[in-house]
Amino acid sequence: MGTHDDIACPLIDMVRESSLRIRNGRTLMDIVEATESETKELRAEVEQIVEGLPPGTDGVFGEGVDVTLCALDAVIQENPNRSNREILAKVREKLEKWERDYSDRIRKDR
Image 1: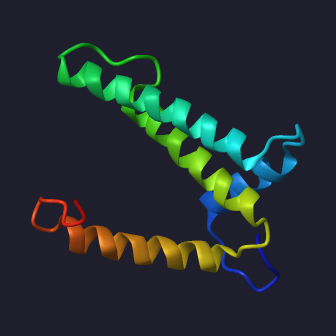
Image 2 (image 1 turned 90 degrees about the horizontal axis):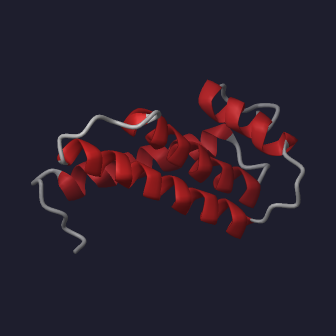
Image 3 (image 1 turned 45 degrees about the horizontal axis):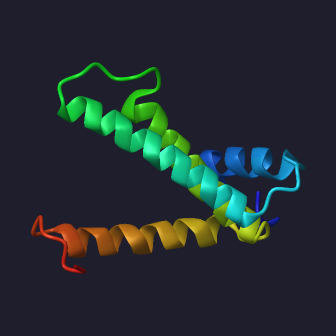
């Protein structure tokens, strides 16, 4: 976990453990590029669904998880000491914003 008095979050803990084990010299920009690649794969899966075609091997589910893991990897690599509590507080804040901004089914930030 992030700190000795932190709260447990299995997803964050699993990603943190894997992220910190990878020692290949990657940079934050490398992680962003991987995230962009995974986002393109997610888009391709969504396009297949929209076109009525069968999903690929990972489907939206697998590609969505890949995007999530890459983004969380960037958060952890940017500051490995950020606590689960801090990450979850930011998640809560962002979810509240999503609900406010998307509650009318129209994005208010465009």
